[in-house]
Length: 122
Image 1 (cartoon, rainbow, N blue to C red):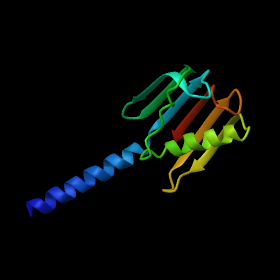
Image 2: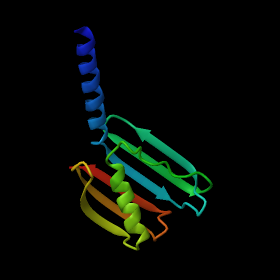
Image 3: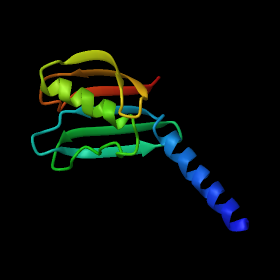
Image 4: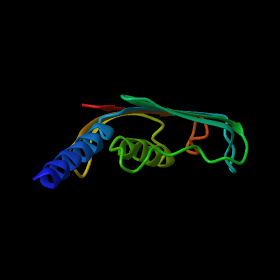
């Protein structure tokens, strides 16, 4: 009986922690990157948000949002829009699990080396 209880509690804890990851707000800002990447990158995550900053030409990739975080779909969405010459936008998207996000983005050009992307769970 104790094993069943521990298994159920463990499963619920994992499910709840995975669910909470999908509800994070994401802010991704890039400034003056180059074709090979960025000189300075930072990734900060707390209980409710993820902040990514990438600046100056260099050789580091801008950190990605972990794939388990549903908000990462919004970052990918905005990057694709930017690469298709849509430099500003504000759209609502739905991920494969039915979660809704507001995606707001702006970019200097289609390279996205200088851009601002916000993803807000709805």
